[in-house]
Length: 370
Image 1 (tube, helix red, strand yellow):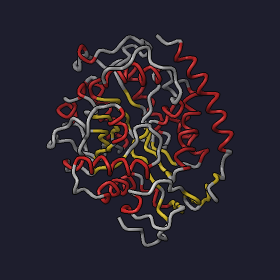
Image 2 (cartoon, helix red, strand yellow):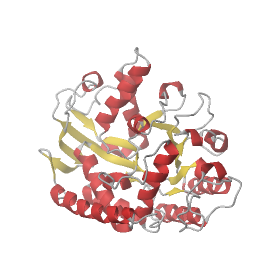
Image 3 (tube, helix red, strand yellow):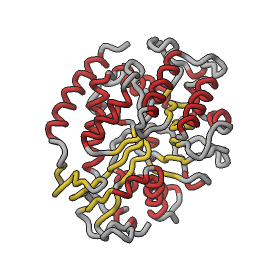
Image 4 (cartoon, rainbow, N blue to C red):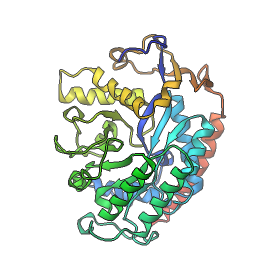
């Protein structure tokens, strides 16, 4: 991707993270799981599904502020976020949007609905093997859909979130699809990330349209039949040992996300490139760089933002082999939000200190979870 005509060689438009979980920003340093996870479903159950149950609106707020701060410090001005906090559903998306706005970062967020919590409060262990997709929608899913509706009715930027097909009934998937169509937005859903969700395409293909975000796709077949943009998350897929999506095999446009591991999109670009190169020695960095352009198509407001970097030539063939590239100056829609490497809207040290205090409160709640 060539530098845009309106930019200098040391500039880009604002970067976009096409799949984030801002609520994970406080997770670093969290208490160890009760036992070592031995599979992807174990990782969900013992780490992430415990974390999201421990969140309240206060920790959601500081997660959003810290995650947005760290994104902006890496030149990412726009985030497409997927949120889950089953014991703090109502108002959570407004809290995230406000937190990001305070930092100066645009966010498109949604609530990931799921039928893991039958009555909306029951923390009973979810068993994918015993889950009945033909069952009725649960109260927890209804509340999640209502939060998505509330957010979209406010006029805020968003989608309709779905956790994953393997944790949702067909009734819930249909309702999410209908809600998205009502507001002319897409569904933001994890698809075939692990073996447990291998059958997702067959259930989702009749529902999906071009506005959908198909997250991961590791275990999709080449001809999966899903409309929408696929979002590749290479670092997360390696971390969870779920396999390599090999995104080049798909006809879908492919963007790039982090799945909650920060929002340093230049770093994620390098990971995407080397993972692609490991699979195909003829691959060059242009294909991974093109994913960042797909991200901009998903969040076109990013083209109103300009990032000036501490590197003279923002060319993918150079950046693939150059670490330590950082923004020095950022404007978001004409407003300077970083000058000489320092954020102008907020005190970054204060945000980090308050987020650290919130993290300690979150960890204490985690320690008391069953």
